[in-house]
Length: 378
Image (cartoon, rainbow, N blue to C red; front, side, top):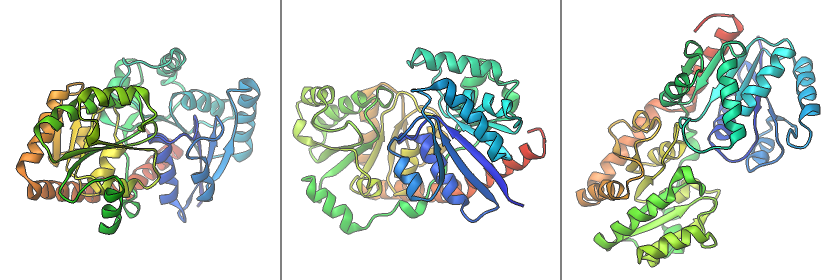
């Protein structure tokens, strides 16, 4: 029997929720579950990927005409008659969940993707989150949290903990490969020599990612380890970023940094690194750490969200917002030498292959779908 799952997501920017949805649908191709996606806002960096993959996509524009698009959303749900409506991110939880109930769909799954409920966010987002907390006892059958830390933080602000389950992210391991030739070519393009030790980070420029922490730690490391170089990849991590350029200049070692900006060849960029660093001040379940682990990189990461659950004993975890601690974590790996780092990276890769594949995530979600459709409690 075919099961029709209708996903509602706030938008299609490149982000953790968008990537998780994209991977889940691709993993489900050919199964008894069919997936349709409604985006509440148009375009975004993932838009073309969804279309190219042949994913059924309907795009609305709530920013321009919220009321008429809410009416259209209800009508779409009535016409599509999904077995389950699954929503992703706060605004989609609220609007998609209410629209589903108005359309007569009781099988609603919400998605919680953040952990930091105390950090800075738009006032409207805080209001939506609080409203969701109130409605969490009425609208969703199940609330899927991406991390145990997300479950804890949201239950503390009023979300119904009895409806919550945790499903971490999975990784498409077929896409996380790169050849030695690709590694060598990118390093050469960046002016990185074969004996340089490359400490890298990957992720868009954002206060939550705390790139200032990475740069400050890199400045300390540059003074201690002559062979270290620093590779930064992601949207906004380019020489045109005045804030970033100022932080780097202040280290006195600007010549040791390489800024690549936004790239689509994530696996190749990771392959050019020798150690991966996550400097964030907040995360839920950081995809990029799992991707680095899948590429066999030893990781140094701040103790945020479910980093510890993801890494286990295969990396170094340090306090957040502490450049000296971050620098010490990297030094620990550098001073142990390349064989130690290779061994840690190998164990990291084995952990991802054993625990965090998309096949496991798909099985978990499909089990939840059946529980919801059959009206069973968690």
